[in-house]
Amino acid sequence: MPNVSGSFSGRVTSQSSVSLPDTPNHDLSLMRVEGVQKCSDPNWNNAPITYWGSADLVAGNGMQRGYFVNEHEDGGRDFGSFEGQVSVSRGAFEGTWTYTGGTGRFQGITGQGTFKAKLTSPTEVENTWEGSYQLAAKGQAA
Image (cartoon, rainbow, N blue to C red):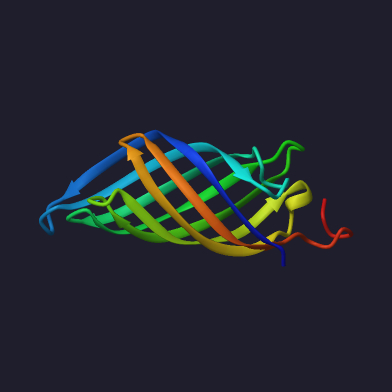
């Protein structure tokens, strides 16, 4: 499996949250973030990424889970899920990601890795990631 690492600067394009009355400072939130990948691997360099995350936070700390999709120049996509810890006071979150599938030459992709992200403003996020992946055998890819 090839190792890969990259980064992207993203913009929060949609966000909502609701406060829950069960515990002080308990919030659930949803967000959509869009950006463009920077990576030495040409499979991901300049690929637009969108991710959707939900967070369950008490006093600004908790879990975030979500989904991502990378769109490639040839029309193929890879997608997966992620989860990690959030600290609003530090403006940071980190965790793990896993590929769940793909289309085109990314059909059958497998892999996983880690990520770290930091809010640089209320609507901007800087994300770095690393991991490994395996494309399906040429006879199996669409």
